[in-house]
Image (tube, rainbow, N blue to C red; front, side):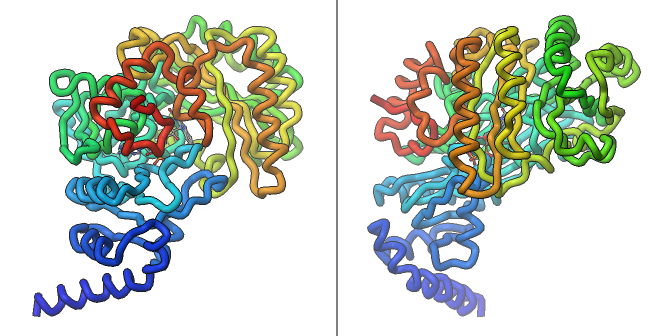
Length: 486
Ligand SMILES: Cc1cc2nc3c(=O)[nH]c(=O)nc-3n(C[C@H](O)[C@H](O)[C@H](O)COP(=O)(O)OP(=O)(O)OC[C@H]3O[C@@H](n4cnc5c(N)ncnc54)[C@H](O)[C@@H]3O)c2cc1C
C-alpha cells in the first residue's frame, strides 16, 4: 500500500515534468536529469508548467521579470546541497532566494536554477544564552515575533517582510543600530553550503576568513542555511511614532534635526522621510498628498525618559500632526510595511554621508519638491553609535564612517512612468554626490551596478576577491553584486 502510494506520487511528479520538456530544452536539461533531481529533493521542484511557478518567480520589485528553468523550494540542508550539486554538474546559472526583497532582483535568474529558501523559515530562541538560530527563509517579522516573546531583539531593518538572509549578508541596519551595531555585528556564527557542496561552519574560530566575508560580502561565498545571532533586551513596548512637519520649513527642520542627533543618546534613533503625506488618520485631510517632512522616532529605553528626550523635536517647525506613544516593538517594526508592499516598480540610488551639509539639504528639498509619483520618497537613516565603533576592516561591510545613509527611493506603478521616476532618482543622486562619502551600501544597489563594487567595499575588496577565489573559484554564486574571483 505504502509502496503503491509512493509510486503514484512519483509518477504524478514525473508526468508533470514531462509537460515541461520544452522548458528543460531551453536550459539544456534532459528529462532524465530532471527526474533524478526531483527524486532526490524533499521540497517542490517547480518548472514553468507548474501552477505554483508564477508565484514563486515573483519578487518584491516588479521591475524584475525573470523566468528560471527550475525552482527548487528547499525543505532542508540536504535539498540545498543537492540543488547546488545539480546546478554545478549541469552548468546552470544559480540564484538563491531568501526574502526576495533585493532591489536588483538577484533572488531570481533567467533560464537557470533558483534555490528558494522561503520554506526554511524557522527561528529558535535560546533566552538564557540570548541567542537566535534562524533559518535563511525567515523574514524580519518571523525573527522579531519569536525573539520578542522573550523581550529580546537584534538590529534588523525597517520593513518586516524583508528577508533576514539577504539583509544580514549585506550588513543590515535599522532602529537598533546606533545602540547595538549592524546586523552583521550581532552575527555569531553561520552554517554555509559552499560551491563544492560541503557544509561548513563560519565563526570566529572556524573558517574566520569566510566569517569575515559573509558579514557584508553578500551571497558570493555559499548558501547560508543557518544564522546564529546574539540578542539584546528590547521592549516589549518602545516609544515610537511619527512627527509630520510643514514642507515649507524643511530647511530649518533638517538643520535642527542634525544638531539634535549630534547630541542624542544611542537608544534614540530618528530618521527623516521627505515625501507626500499618506492619508494617515492623524493628519488633516488637506495635508494628504502634500509634500511633508516626517521625523520617524524610536527610543529603546524607559518610555518616560524617551518622552522627555524627544520633547525638543516638536519645536523644529509647524507640526501638521503627530502619532507617538508606547507601542509593541513588533508593531513599530511593521509600521512602514503599508508604504513598502510588494508589486510596485522600484528604483533606488543611495549615498552615505558624514553630515548633512547645507548644499545637500537644499538639493534634498529641491528634489523632494518635484516627486514624479506619489510613492517616491527620500529616506535619511541615522547610523553611527555602536556601528561606528568597529574598524572598517573588521567585517566586509566597510562604511563605519557613514553617519547618515540616504536612499532616493523612486516607486511607481506602471512601466510608462519608468523613465520619469528613474531619471528623478538619478538626477538627485548625481546632484548630491559632491556631499557624499563615495561609499554605497551593497544592499541598495540596482540591477547592472556591479561597477559600484569598489564603492561598496573600498579597501576590503581585494580581501574579498582572495576569499572568493578560495571558496568559489569558478564563480558558481554569481547572481549577486558579484565579487569575481579574478
Ligand atoms: C522594502 C525594503 C526595505 C528595506 N529596508 C532595509 C533596512 O531597513 N535596512 C537594511 O539594511 N536593508 C534594507 N533593505 C535592503 C535589504 O537588506 C536587501 O534588499 C536584501 O537583499 C534583502 O534580503 P532578502 O533575503 O529579502 O532578499 P533576496 O532577494 O532573497 O536576497 C538578496 C541577495 O542575497 C542572496 N541570498 C539570500 N539568501 C541567501 C542565503 N541564505 N545564502 C546566500 N545568499 C543568499 C541572494 O542570492 C541575493 O543575492 C530593504 C529592502 C526593501 C525592499
